[in-house]
Image (cartoon, rainbow over all chains, first blue to last red; front, side, top):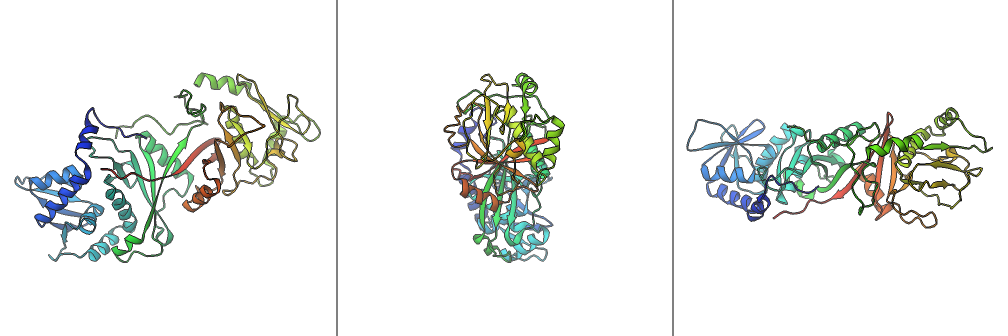
Length: 259
Length: 185
């Protein structure tokens, strides 16, 4: 599936402003201002000035919270986002209830206690972020993440991502039955995304500490539905599309749902 | 292509002969399919019929093609489609007699592929079929695991494969393709 840019000139705009550079600027600024996050249930809250707020927005970390405060803004980070800034980019420190700074191991344990599959979902999140993809929650599409080539204002997300595991950390129950495959592929198709499974193998390293992560391996697979009615010509032939839905040839869906 | 599908289905006909050259009625055919050794002939038949009626060339994996001629011989099965060429494609598995025999001893397993499939306009020749467009596995219970898919990739090399799921009269095809998202700037 080709990337779908949201307007003319936006691809050029994205090329001129690479995500890796924006994230790198965010990292430097967070370190410079010695930013501290507050641990709050399943989120981390950070208070930032205008410059950092702009960088967080442009790099797609967190969501701004509406407050009456004028000079500062508050952002709410998901667990994966917060841990990425703390552990991978080493530019954020998180303070717990007692006012002390949490170590990476403490944060890891804490997030695992909130989300059993956190090690797997974090591995997938960080794997894609390292490649400079923008990764956001995919909950509204029934998946774990959605991946964008650049800022969501410029481009539609191409991939609906499921973080799956195998090996000793086999906690994810998705795509174990055909009805789930049908359901997920159909939903992804109706919002013009390709279903991407990212399968994490812990290689028997367990999940006791974040240092286990570097031994995890990752494999990516797309799952797509093939419609024999549309593919009858060789590649050089004209496309034979049909909108008629019959029992045997139900398309995955080409109509975009309003989400 | 919606307007083409209806005529195809009307004209598509299945002529089945059993070992004694006696024409089987549809009822007899269905009975035989249901009594298959592993009870899976029905699904195999559904998939086969589905693809053939759309003009695909479908062969049993592992069985060589042989060129027959225009007759309906005893011991062969033929399925006519109403393609422009009106080609009668016959298949003669090594030692088989009817479409039941076509599926004889076939078990649907996730490790042994069911069919080799060629695109309808792929200039298929029985004398030199070439590599299939893809190999088709028919799934019984659950979607394949990553380990199973990797094993199949090693087995088939450059030839793609797909999984087919049959349920409730619905035939669906899925591809599980390895990919690697590029590193972006």
